[in-house]
Length: 298
Image 1 (tube, rainbow, N blue to C red):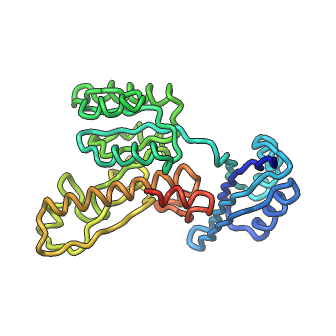
Image 2 (image 1 turned 180 degrees about the horizontal axis):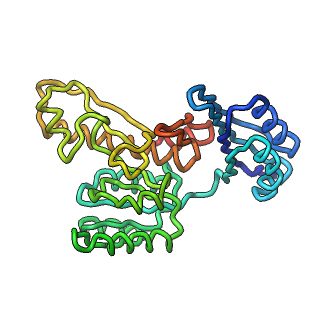
Image 3 (image 1 turned 135 degrees about the horizontal axis):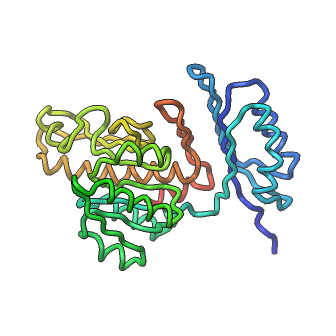
């Protein structure tokens, strides 16, 4: 019986310099690796180069060995490089308030294997979904948040996140604004779903605003959280068509479906290392063949 070669990915971000692609490909070839998927983007506006490769280590090299051997290339091209074990599940903490559609969607995708993550906890400022979460064997943390206790509540959230070893925090309609300090500490590790096709119709009731304006498309936006409210780098967006004959409730129902799909796609892209922050924007490479099927299962 043949032994499956380890399946890894390599992420590289560096200044745009001639020869970087060739040198990376040569390094992988010379260390017994076979590239199965490659995506790259050279941004002429920022002078930055981004690459993601999926590959198999056919002679049994470990991630540590590959990282160590790549050090010279990182120094030569001033590159930020990350080697990823594509079979390893990223630890994720979900945060939710009283709207549960995104939470339930993520839990479903996790249960059927469409979203290969390890949910290590759910944090909420309400108890609405405690029983649902705990029935699945996931630890539920209730942390009440008020104007008076917000710093203490946030400190407890950070303690839980750090103790769990979570690599990603997903705000699945968590309706509390995070402090600037928390946004900075967790930069690039918090994904939020905004119930609007940003930048239009910000605020607590975007679907009512959309209805009153008679829009023909409504949508949702998943983005990284920054200190600037709802202005972090966008990861994923989508829309759905509506008509004059539909009600506000129709807008809300359709919008929740879009929110769930957009958030799941953003989380999938992040955990597979397909997202690169590029200033105020992001580079999002398409799913590689090995992960495409799981993403489409939802």
